[in-house]
Image 1 (cartoon, helix red, strand yellow):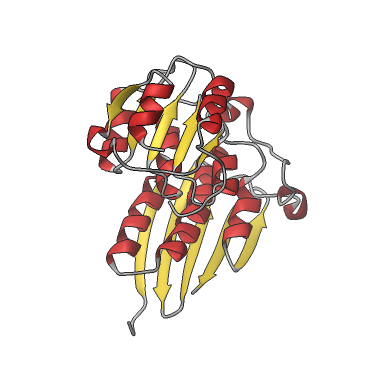
Image 2 (cartoon, each protein chain N blue to C red; image 1 turned 90 degrees about the vertical axis):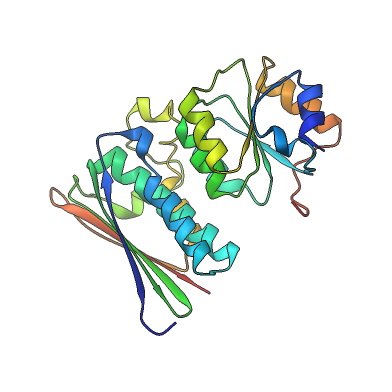
Length: 140
Length: 117
């Protein structure tokens, strides 16, 4: 593979029940191009948590996945409220998600820690009032 | 443990995946919190949960799990079952609670350790 392969998705912020559809599609496409199963799982779980975050906190956004030789980069960009204290947001168990999100199986303060756990590198750029971009890299 | 045995032990209904009844799994995970499933599952093939929405199926799909058991008499809607079918995941539903379901399966040999699912 010489040229990077790119996937782009608009993540719909209006509908929680559709959250995760992009990650399911990425998983399928990575399988089709022969990426190892363990790598696919790491990429798709990290992206799935990110997608859920975008729907819960930011009314959706854009997801881009770039497949290069030996690495996969996931870029999740939203125009949500931003993250004031990134270190605090990274703390396992810390969550600002509303109570109703918990009854949906998320909002336990595990999203960002899970994203970090499953990727080799994670960078969060956020401006309060403007939005957040999370860039994750999985090496293989 | 085969899905057919899970069905018997939990007096469960099979909502989809009848063709998978003889598939054999050796470990399971139980949680209502999908983020915990995403954090802690490591090749467990069976998910027991009392949460009943589309995210359960997507979460199981992400973790390459093969069978979802809805506990506490939760009735998954048609779109949940349909998505599971598309994802190649068997769906069972039991009236038993999470604690009882996990206890029965565990004591009959379906453990938590991921071995070779």
